Image (cartoon, rainbow, N blue to C red; front, side):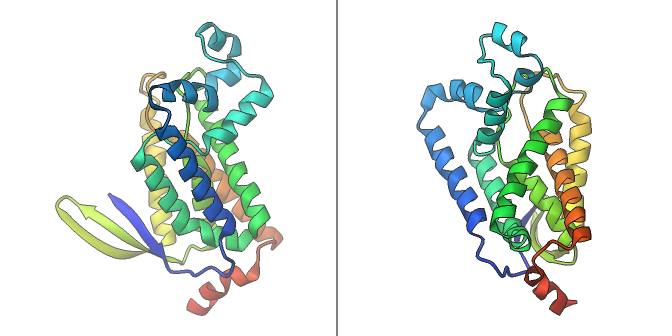
Amino acid sequence: MFFPLRDSIPSDLRPVVNMLIIVACSVAFLFELGLGGSLQAFFQAAAFIPARLFYPHAVARLGLPAYGVLGNVTTVLTSMFLHGGWLHIIGNMWFLYVFGDNVEDALGHGRYLLFYLGGGFAAALTQAIMSPGSVVPTIGASGAIAAVLGAYMVWFPHARVKTLVFLLIFVTVIDVPALLFLGYWFLIQFFQGTLSLAAAPQTGGIAWFAHIGGFMFGIVVGLIALKRESLRPTAFLSVWRRW
């Protein structure tokens, strides 16, 4: 098991959007905690459910709210700010805190927000395509954050990630190149996603293909931005000085 503590690249811009996303997710989670026994009904209404997109009539017969295109788009958006427990939100927000500031630095505030939301939509669509009949509510910022990780890997592969590593009963901290850290992270998502294909389609768990879809979205956008030279050059000054 491994966990990032911090990266080696300071950001030039203050990560205003990144922090606002973290605050919004935290406020939404506190709201969830106050719902008590009605939380599941709230998730069924506000979370993204793949079957609602592909089989709306079947979903309606199950007693779940069936939405049109606009309703499904709305639930994809709201689902990005919902989380299923303390470990879920803490893990997601910490990854976003560690890696999101540099991606926002490279894109600028407005484009970073659009990129983050676009990654969330790409992640939700990927998960829906892989499990179109699922009526399990899909929640969490993981897909959008995976897009951030994908872009970070493309733009800052030589950054160093100070990583907390758990090896059975031993715990240590090591510096890992971002390319290796994030590449390993993606391989875990890919293999877990492949294994999940054999699981029962209506069981809950981690939306592995949302992570995969978001990460690939981040890589593609990252490569296009590099080709078009549309990134803020000051975001890479510390990398240039290091290398």
